[in-house]
Image (cartoon, rainbow over all chains, first blue to last red; front, side):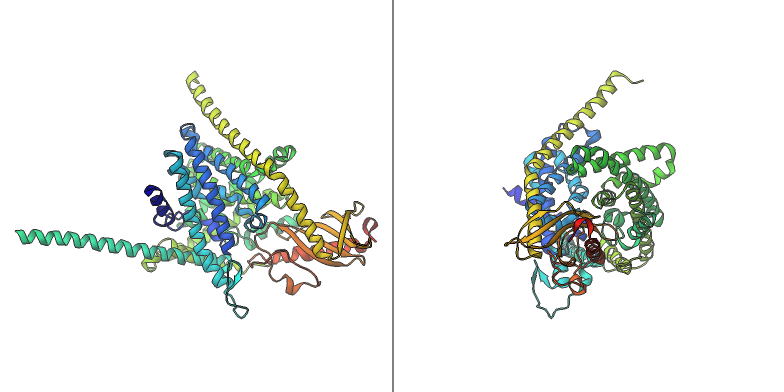
Length: 220
Length: 194
Length: 178
C-alpha cells in the first residue's frame, strides 16, 4: 500500500511527466483552453496509459527486443482507437471539443516513454499503477495550465462565469501564444519550487558536515 | 480542387494555420531541436521529406485499404505504422546514400515517428476529404511551415544565449515564453482570406 | 550467406509482432462492434434535435431525394402537426477555407430563404464566437459555446458560404424545390 502511495506521489509531483520530465507538450498547449477539455484529455490519456502499460507489461517477455518500439506503438495506437470510439459513442461533446488530439494521444511521448522505461521491466500491477500515477500527473499539469488560462483568459471556470459580464477577459491567454506563455510561467514556478527545495537540502547537508567538522575539532 | 485552391491551401498551412504557432503540432521537436539553426534546418528538411511521402502513403492506405473494407476506424493504427515504417526506410536510405545527413540528424530521425505533425497532417487530410494531390501538397506545405517555425525559433534562441534570465526561468520556461512571443507575431496572419 | 538460424530468427520476430498486431486489432474490432450502434444512434438524434430546434413546430419529416446539390448530404421536407409543410432542412457539409469540414443542418422556409442553422458537428477545435454578432440572419444558433482562436474566422466563412449555397440552390428551383 505504501509503495502504491509513493508511486502516486512520484507521478503527480516529484516526477511529473509534464512539469518535471517535460514530456507531452503538444496536448498541454493545445487542449488547455478550458478546464473541461484539459481534464477530459488528461483522463483519456490516463486511460490509455493504464491499459497500454498493463498490456506491455503482460507481454514483456513476448515482445522481441529488436522491434519493441514498433510493438509499443501498435499497442498504444490500438488502445487510443478504443478510447476514441468509446468517447464518440458516450461522450460526444467532449470527443468533439478535443477533436484531433484524441488520436494524437498515440504520439504523446509520455506513453511511449513509460512503456519503455517502466512497463517493459516491471510486473503488470505496478505497471498499471505507474500508468495511473503518470496519467494523473499529466492531468494535474493540464489542470494547472487550464485553470490559469480559463480564469484569466475567459473569466470562467468549468464554464461557469466568475466575474460577471463586466469582466473583459485577457483573450491572449486562450490563444496559441497564451498557451506557450502560461506553460512557460507554470514550469518556471515549478522549477523555482524545486530550486528552493534543492538549495534547502544543500544547506542542510552543509550544516551537517560543518557540525561534524566542528565536533572533530573539539575532540582534537 | 483547382490549382488555386491548392495554392491557397498551402499558403494557409504555412502561415495562417502554422502547424506550430497556431495548432501546436510538432512542439516536442520544436522545443527540443531548435537550439542551433543548422540542426533546425536539417530536422525541418527531414520532416518535410517524411511528411510529403506520408501524405501520399497514408492517403493511399486509407482509400485503397481501409475504406473498401469498412475499416476506417483503424486509421490511427494504420497511419502510425505507415509513418514508422516510412521513417525506418528513410533512415536506411540515408545511411546508405547520404551518410553525412544521416550522421548530422542523429537521434532526431527516428524521433520523427512520434512527431505529432506527421500524424496530424495525415489525419487532417482524411478529415477534410482532400484529394490525393491536395493531401500531398498539404503535407508538404505544413512541413514547410514547421521548418519555417523551427528555423526562425533557432535564430531567436541563438540570440537568447547571451542573456541571463532568472534561475527559475532558465532552460525550458524562457524557451516557452520566447515561443509565445513568436506565436503572437504569427497570430497576425489570422483571418487572411485571399 | 543467409543461414537457417537467421531466417528463423527474423521469422520469429516477425511472427511475434504479427501476433501482437492481431491481438490488438481483435480488441479494437470488439470495441468498434460495441460502439457502432450508439455512435449511429447519437448522430441520428443530433440531426433530429437540430431539425426541431430550427422548426419549433416540426412534427415529422421525410427525406426528399429529388433535391440534390453539392454539399447536401440529405434534404428533409419538414411538416407540422397538421400536415402543412414548414419548409426543408438540409443536412449540409461545408468546408472552411483552409479545410475543416463543418456539418450543419440548414433550415429553409417555404419561401426559399434560410430560416435557421444549427452546427451538428465540426472538425475544428474552436468555433467562431463572433458568429452571433455578425450573422445576417435571425434564428441562427450554434449548438455549442464558442472558444476564440487564431483560426476562428474560418468557421464563420464556412457557415456563410453554406447559407449562400443553400439559398442559391433553392432559389434556382433545384430538382423540384418549391
